Length: 261
Image 1 (cartoon, rainbow, N blue to C red):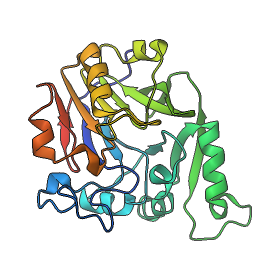
Image 2 (image 1 turned 90 degrees about the horizontal axis):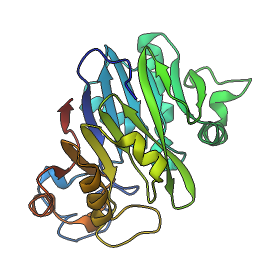
Image 3 (image 1 turned 180 degrees about the vertical axis):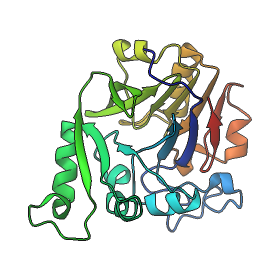
Image 4 (image 1 turned 60 degrees about the vertical axis):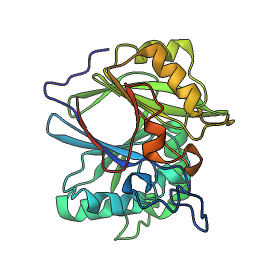
């Protein structure tokens, strides 16, 4: 699918850690005690800037810190992959953009995700809405391609154990997190991407996430120009050591990493 993109895509990794982040509270493993900033991982999220627009995919509990760290002063939409707390818990902090930009913020996700968000944040959507609550406009998506501000998004449906999760392809960039299975039909949508981001929780097999080996095997099959692993736990190992063992075109993502595609 060719999406409506007439400029380069800029990608910023806002967070690359698993649901409890890295370092893990109370943990004294070498990764959690590492002085290397590449081993410090906030909850997984990515910012995509294209055609003068700014999109964030998932806003977890570290959303506020991520926006401040990257000095983000515009937001056109938040696109959700699924409804787990580490991907939606920062939703309340969108209100800062409401105040400064004087506009509602569009949010996109499957009907299941939007229903979960309304359950988790009832005060945002109540008829007697609290004055200071975020101002959002909900957009339900399905399997069909959709556009935001003339930028095309192609949903890629994956499974997180049994939970449906949506990845996204934007031009030559594909982003998939929290996946343990991708059907052949959905893999066809990914083929030809220049850059692919894929989750890899740990080295051993996991019921709801790809392992590093499983992710590398799939990426080797797809063979993009470059690939990055995200949603990483401390069990993956030290950033520098792991990178030295990966195929040349695959690297661990890290918080603050910026790409131009």
